[in-house]
Length: 71
Image (cartoon, rainbow, N blue to C red; front, side, top):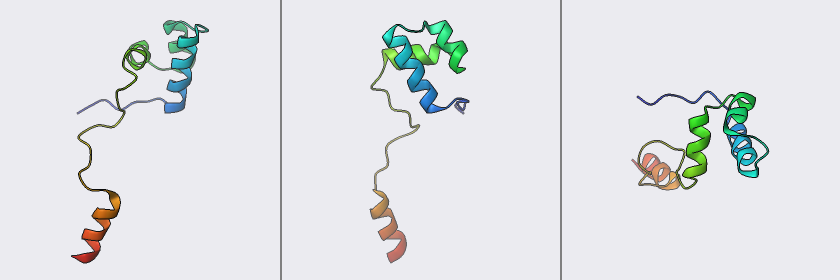
């Protein structure tokens, strides 16, 4: 079972921006925002990585609701 994050997504975005701009180091951003240094590093090295767990849904919400309603 994956660990649950204990920080706000907006804080992560701010931390990544600060490190990218050079206003903060990884360590100072870690202390300032309470986000692990490794998480900030990963987000900078892999910006294309999605945040959701598991596979993408096959049906859209609309299709799923149609199936539920009709059956």
